[in-house]
Image 1 (cartoon, rainbow, N blue to C red):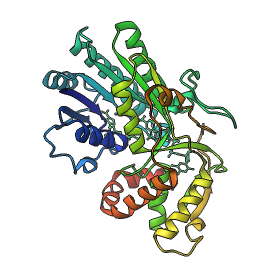
Image 2 (cartoon, protein in one colour):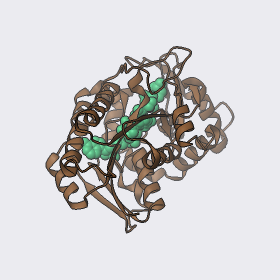
Image 3 (cartoon, rainbow, N blue to C red):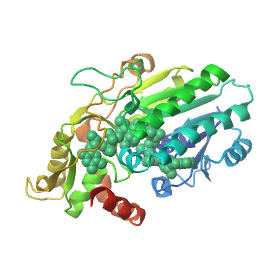
Length: 349
Ligand code: NAD
Ligand code: DAU
């Protein structure tokens, strides 16, 4: 079947894996990547598929409604998969307004562009919004986030994502726009910008720099391999019910310090260093303000209703991720030049 699908944020970490999956799996679909190419957007992520005849790139900012209208007119999309966002919690503490603009106003612009272009003809149309488990706030030692957990965001990032989720839901209720939202846990894998825990620490181990663990290091996250997230997005895109939300998670909880120690062990093996070498780089630093203690997803709805579950074990995924970073030093060098250095100095001194 032929379809035109706009994927926003396709030059970023998760977006590039989703674009690649769709371009390869659906040769009959036109895949249109709409991305502003901020510091986090990198077309090098898509070099292997950029010449595919069903792939199109439009450099555009979702804050610019006129540009969005032109793109919608040109491609007449059947569906939107919306990933474009400011995505890093620490940056949202330094500069909250960037998150309000892109994540809230940008999402509402995109909703309006879809609503205007489809003009009430919603047959076979879909606006699929990619969100995060951080909208639910923080868990205690026990329990899981379900689709009905009340929203309680604690950072400017999660507040902006929660706000965008509410707008998407509201456009479904008020304008009958066919919408779906999914809320996913922490992703890791190739092409993740080295401001997030795993790629930052891989890069610092390679460079022999300190590994800055926030607070007591006992914060817990539920880690999912990015290619499994992309498969979940495909699954929801094809089989998800309009108006529904789906939680996606790895069933894979780790305290930060335990994860960092495992990463250090794997890095020592791969770099043929003496055991314990990388662990010496661990350095406890001042905590992140508003730091959520624990995230954990109950993914039984997507598992039971759509048949999705993670396919990659953490050891496997982490090992593949480290290999990718060690084999793609040029990619790392490109993304860590310029703006990155300024951010790093400001954040870690
Ligand atoms: P990322 O920061 O790696 O990529 C974001 C992309 O959006 C970049 O390509 C950037 O250029 C683009 N972008 C930013 N502002 C834009 C604008 N105004 N107009 C157009 N494009 C713009 O992000 P990611 O980690 O790949 O996350 C993608 C989405 O998934 C986000 O919506 C995020 O909230 C969500 N999410 C991320 C995770 C995670 O662990 N990374 C987990 C759950 C949900
Ligand atoms: O849960 C999903 C979310 O996961 C996504 O919505 C976000 O886009 C994504 O960035 C991620 O948010 P986190 O804040 O959980 O990820 P981050 O990699 O920044 O941090 C993971 C944990 O590691 C967190 O407890 C903070 C800690 N940390 C992070 C950094 C960057 C450190 O201890 N030191 C660090 O230098």
